[in-house]
Amino acid sequence: MKMSDTTSMPQKTSDLGHGSSNLPARHRIGRIWQTIYFLSTLFGIIILTILLLDIINDSFGYVAITSKVNELTLTESGAPLEDISKEELIIVLEKNLRPNRLKTIIQEKPLEERDTTDLLSIATKEVVQPKVVAVWGLADSIFRKNEIPIQATEIAIQKKIDPATVQIRFVSWLDDDFVTSPQSSDALYAGVRTAMLGSIYVILFTILVAFPIGIGAAIYLQEYASSNWINRLIQTNINNLAGVPSIIYGMLGLAIFVRSLSALTSGAIVNYPNADPNNGRTILSAGLTMALLVLPVIIINAQEAIKAVPNSLREAAYGVGATQWQTVWHHVLPSALPGILTGAILATSRAMGETAPLIIVGASTFITFDPDGIFSKFTVLPIQVYQWTSRPQPEFRAIAAAAILVLLALLLTLNATAILLRNRFSRRLP
Image 1 (cartoon, one colour):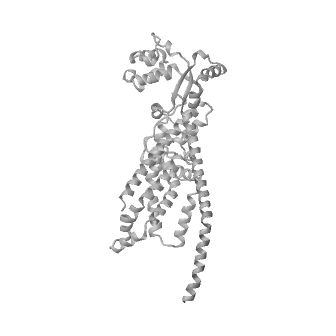
Image 2 (tube, one colour):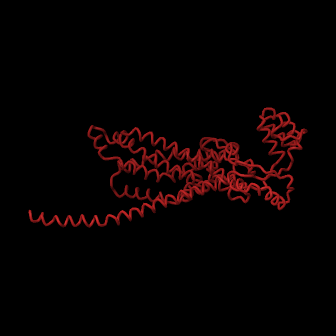
Image 3 (cartoon, rainbow, N blue to C red):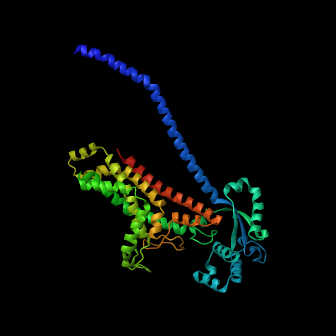
């Protein structure tokens, strides 16, 4: 035995020396991969930064505008409309609006009951009727500011517009009016209020449906389901469904929720006003379709979070007499909740940016009224952006960029809320 031990020592020393000789090479390979990972991360950050800067560039800048009526000729003093009083604005509207149009506006709300801002908006839109001649981005507005008047004159002549009527002003397409105004066929007055409310309705209903169902399915598959061929088949299908193209879910939603269950999704079954029992193109159909889309993602992430909980925690609970459900509810689920919320964040991010399934389900590309419930017709921000970018006028591309910023802000707000909840539950864990 002693001789055997003695002869084995040189071999171990030789192996150690061989490993030491390879150490510099392994460190070199490690540094190479570290550099590759760093460059990949840096490249991704640069691309995202360029994309964000391009969006910001289109959201601000100078605009050349001409008007059908010179606003200085509408007042006796020759003052701009924003400098006159409320009473003078009412006089301008009564003198210059067509009788039928003036009657319609008064029926909506009497002029005397409107504030100055509302009257000024009506006078500008209905009487002055400004029109965009040309648009410049933020970069051109800063670095080529002196060239803009010359370009504006050339463009006006090409479009057979009197250059004397063209005014150049700096415009922030992303402002309070843009967020609070509904859709319009005129880019100067178009807003994202309707689309933003539609996105919020759809996302909240999606989470309300998918989150509890997804967690329940994950708990069953991970904690209760036995290892038989049926459960393995279910698990395999869930994994496969996570990779199915979103347009397939749109076709499924169209067949089931919009057509087969139209009496329910249209609201006709509960006597919703103006509900069409044969047309279920509503927020309810969209929310259910998006819930199907994100359900596999939520289930898979929740399963992984539950699987990561140490078995010692379960055994300790069983050891003090807890039932399986008590163990899951009071110990496993709280420990896995941060990971589950991470999956919910990923699912919400995916649902927020989806367009194809909602187009198939029936989201409108042009809608001017706000949704008031789950049975309302709707549109969402991604579809609004798509609709604006498909137009040839540069001003619509500018408001599309502003809408993208609103979508990013909304997405970051929802994600930040979920992250705060996740961190709060994480701090509660021992």
